[in-house]
Image (cartoon, rainbow, N blue to C red; front, side, top):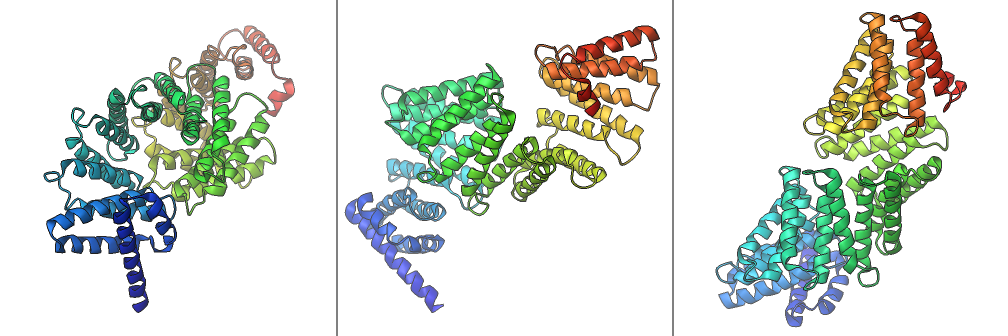
Length: 575
């Protein structure tokens, strides 16, 4: 107890010393930061408690004039500690928040409106950046602070501060957890657009570029409107930001915008997918010229993770090499993204690494799939349903796919595990909330039921057909032509194997599905899928019950000969 008290006394002495230095230097970082740097061991949550107790007591004891002076010093110190680059960020933010909140008991809106607004604004930033406590609640507090500041910071009276606060309010809405995500992003876009009315490229080029960058990120994540158009707007905003954020003038900001531009190109719908991915890779590689592991380890890891995703999806180059590049990127990211320091990012990198192992060509397939399962299971230790329901569902879906293809272990059990994972994913990936993911999972579930060993074959095929038909409610030929064709082809396979109902009718249904698939699967656009579907048609016609037998055999042979234009007989017999 005595030791704790002595430590507290030492911390209190340090606090009083640093407050005096702040007062004497008028908040000069060159004076205060060396003092903080020499005492980082004393900058911890306990200091925040001592700060609150001392400041609350002191402000109540002194005369109003002295209280105002002390409150001003507390605000200056809070500004400094909030931006202090050393020590634990969590402790720095907590101490800053404590200072702002205590100071606001003296700096009231009625007595000091401008200082009150500035302190509310700074408190909002501190809550936005806060690591400890509930992220959702911190963002609600930040939004409330920014909105309070805007009650004084009107566009007419304080245009520059008004624009700055609108920009920061936009950031808080972009990251907001509470409320509808779509509406929060609309609010963010509105805030950024208001800020840009004052933050013009001529008057405030640096701030204009920052807000353009932020607006680009909001458009990139936007739910309302057409996804393709939103991504084009995002790319345009990032490119505008880069007119000011040059590598020479603002290297850190330039790298940040290059990273985000890479994300936008990776997800771009307009233009050729292969070319967009090449642009994404180029952006990430540019960002990594500044975001080195030594200078900016966290940002370096972020960009390595993003680069890994781009390599995973890459069309240009050898597929095997691209997957190796992706795995290397994720493993580099995980050197910084440890579970202890960055649990959320660690889980996402594990998830991405799992995807890369599933698609890996190099190495033993069985081992790669087991590695993927291990990665997904690690990700689920952080991506719990309660904390991260959407990420949890995505991981369950991908884990299901890995179990379906697994070679190690009993095939029967692996398929049951896959079905269980898909069904868990569908608890979050509902048709209403996530129609695309819902349809994808229904499709995967259909494949798994079709090949299920446990249970009655006839019943499993009925479930498979039902899943494919559900998937087709979202995967329409207009909205998702390639996925529609894939689902039609798989539905055809299920009908062909169907046990329930007359065999003749089932084969007719299968033929109809294959012919639908071929409306998209042309020889020019999708030669391998075209050949597979032609082969399926040849089998269906060879065993067709309806129609002239000779005509059916002739068609079967014709379809088979067409399929051989792309694939060999051995390919089909191996399948």
